[in-house]
Each structure stands twice: as structure tokens, then as C-alpha cells.
Image (cartoon, rainbow, N blue to C red; front, side, top):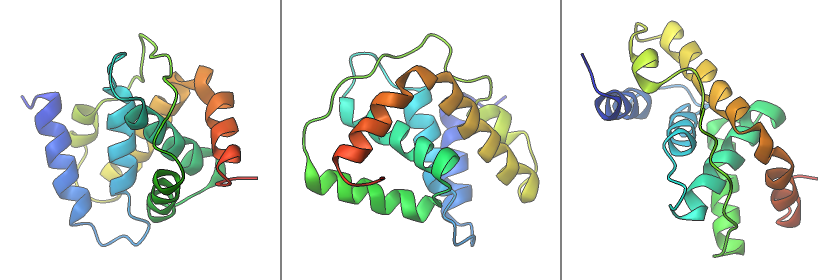
Length: 139
């Protein structure tokens, strides 16, 4: 059986070689970053993960557009607030995603995984939106 870390690295390899122009690789990075954030970790990691999940699931951004938003945010500030880390961080894991066959089934599971992680962090939603507005990423 594959460990979480092994599943994540397999997913990174899978999505980096994926020809989809939407760049689903970014959603894997963001889901993992939020799901595995440490309460005492660097605030930038969790904020960027949550921003990416919000932009994708609520604003319809592709992974490529999220990547551009991350670059814009990084150019605007070097300091980010800490966010609370909930005990439950989504019902789906990287291992669950890797159990699906490569192709449309796995791609759908990546979408479901990232959506479940975003839902777990729903308490951070208003703070994420406020920061994205302050930095002119969204209206």
C-alpha cells in the first residue's frame, strides 16, 4: 500500500506530464498544501493553497490562472497572516486519488479532493477573499 507522501509524489508526476492546458497540477499542489499545513508552518504556504482552492472552486480559475495569481501575490507582499488549521481537512486524500485509474476518473478525483479540502477550510473563506481583494486579485 502506498503512503500519503508516495501518493502525492505520484500525483505530481502524473499531473506534470498531463497535457491538459488547464494545468490541474496546481490543484494537487494546493490541496496537498492546505491538507498538510502545520499550525506553526509558514503562513504563505497555507494562504497560497487556500487562495488557489478558492479561486478555482468559487471563481472558476484554471490551474494556470491560479499560478499567475500566486505570482501576482508574491510580487505584492512578503508577509501573510496565519490561518487556523481545522482538525478535519477533507475526507479525500492523495491515496484516494491514486486509487483511481489514470485519465478522466483520476482527474475528477483530483477535483473532488481539492473541493473537499476547500470545504474543510470554509471558516477561512472570508479572510481569503478579503486578502485577495486587498491585493487586487479579485473584485
